[in-house]
Length: 289
Image (tube, rainbow, N blue to C red):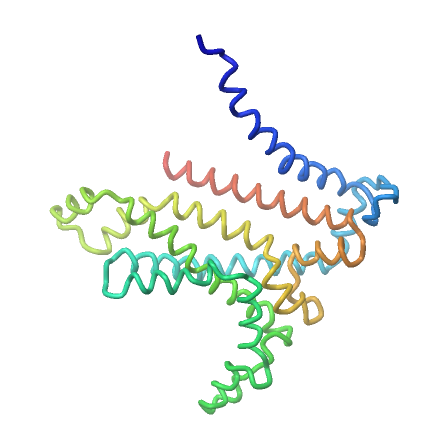
């Protein structure tokens, strides 16, 4: 006779790994956000309560960093989502060359973010960079800019590169949703004489609720913690105009040895991400009701 504790014993190793490598680091980071510590093991941690969070609320740099995360979110919702949806529709349509297009669009996803960032930094280089050289060759010199060195363009240039990088991943999310729609549904609506607009509005969009949910959660959580592209392309500059919460976390913790402030930023990123995920889940459940 099988023991009633057998299922619990089977999941125990995985649970132990989760507690050790996920729950404990997160809980420790949240707890450390209430202390002042310089990161040196021999130095004491001084309890400061909410002072780290108060300091964040008083410093405009942190509001600017979270505003930049908002720009990543805006770019994702207004441009990346429709682009990825369109690309997903193209690769599942079976048009000629769709396999090549699928590989080409997905290629940035498998490349190193470091390589992508260095490549685009070279493309956007103001003096002799390919983009400005192309504009000058087309007699559009007035459009040539210092894309990464101007406070007006730096953050939007990084937002564009981020969208270019992840378009292929989100393309597959929508493509998976499209191919999961049963063929019987398309056959029935064809018999009923539904037009393309009606099929898109009443069949395609409702059937892709889970795909949109996955996109929204990944897009917003990714926008809150974007680091690699910003750090390599602009270093948060010029003058902090392209900083994000993740880059500020790095600078505060590992350059200025203010680990309490860094953990406070990380805790806020975690809370905003969880709040957004819960909001999206609740919205999807209401749509399904």
